[in-house]
Image 1 (cartoon, rainbow over the protein chains, first blue to last red):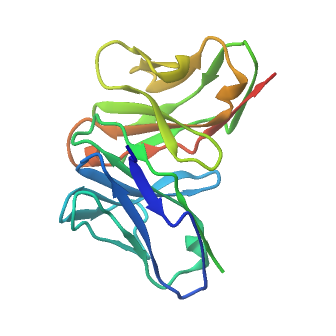
Image 2 (image 1 turned 60 degrees about the vertical axis):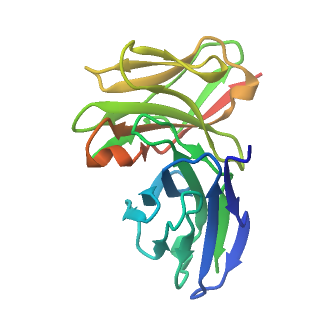
Image 3 (image 1 turned 60 degrees about the horizontal axis):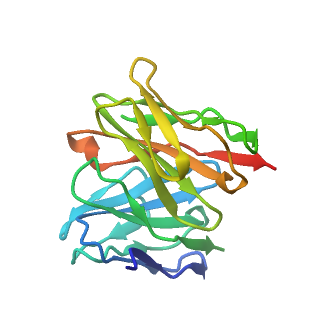
Length: 113
Length: 116
């Protein structure tokens, strides 16, 4: 059982480039999330989705876009990368309901130079 | 808006001693509370949660946490620390219902170091 799988694990971008972080889960969870983790800052929610075709902004959505065409996949797109987007990105999923715990991927470390 | 405070950036404890990692929260409604652990270069792993009922909840690896509504706290505890418990610990909160129930808000994390 793979759980939540993120690719790539590491990536270096130049300022102004674009890229997509991939996330897929095989647990049939309706809820999916993208967080970024910066040292000493905890995790900040970027976008979330409560089901296929439904997405909404979190706390720090600027500079990012998401789509949710299937239950399994929730890619995060960075347009015009900036140094402020240097971070570790985590995708997570949870079963329907606010009582459900989140299952996290292993993270994608992005550096923008 | 909901928020979580973890007042200690780092906690050091000797192996075999009890440990406590502190967490306080703020929400406008009934909270669901969670603790997660993160080992170096890994994703977060769920430890335990408080939904309703008994204020003392037990979780993975011998950890437990006590929900205190009057003090809006949810401290993580373990009777006897192991060196392998050394990691980064996150407290998190979400509303039990309403629009905010979709979003899990995390604290900044507390680094636990267990000294042999």
